[in-house]
Length: 381
Ligand code: SOE
Image (spheres, protein in one colour):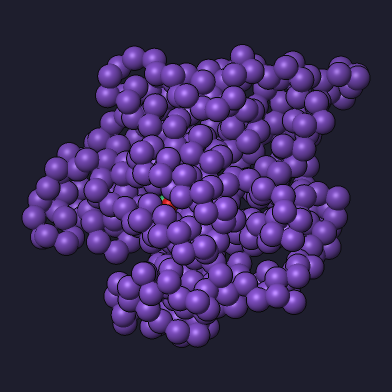
């Protein structure tokens, strides 16, 4: 077994989900690379040490440059806030490291383009962690689409609803709350939540070509955790858009952090001439499928597939039929595919170029909301 020596930049929520995947990979998947937790890096030394101790990293760094330049690191994984993604990824690529990056790829399209250029010029393996593609039910949805079971698609509708920023007392900026600070995050729910749904949508239903959007910032000022001052809020709290897909279907997207009662309701529905698909993250082990052709009218109806059989995507690696896996396994499945790509030479998606397409749609959404008009996304067809 070859070692895949990991340098983890960031120790928050995503640092934990990714690290869990590195630790469990070889237990569940027959891979020829075994991740080694070489270095954990974070600006706050005490927190970085605690993270490294808990998860088993061999050493701690407080300057990401030391990780990127270290000869004993093969892969740099960026789980730090969005404002440092580009700088770290570009330096990592130049140093010849494999680069994995948490979503969204960057704050802006310009940054994302530079990141793609850097990894492609260096010829290093790269991937963005759009983990929901690897929910087995969503991977099964993709399989059903590819098998032609949906037929000509007409509609794609999706939402991602949360409620954790409704209180105006929630500060912006600093640890955990950098998602509310436009300088650190780049955007609000567009980059944080819509980006997931855009990636999933283009995975299942192809390129989005045009959008018209409306965003809203419900709380206009918040205390900034780093300065202590009340400052204008620059992020979008909610974002809604209508989309046109290259295949002729229409899309409806909604993301918000102001849907009282919803913690992380991520849903999608695809309607085609021959069938429909429906998914809800709160019941992530199920895929609903409506099959039209060849099914006699008296038994025609929505079918609920419990996606736990060995023939379902990824499920042969886990338990026995009927027993479920969870959120954390989406990262494990993602990593397993990335490592399989290292073994076979296949370009596992979403690589940075693929994540750039999602970034283009995000940028078009924000622009459309600003300018109040339809905007072409420029997504590669
Ligand atoms: C935001 O609350 C968040 O944690 C996102 O940043 C993640 O990407 C998403 O998967 C869950 O919600």
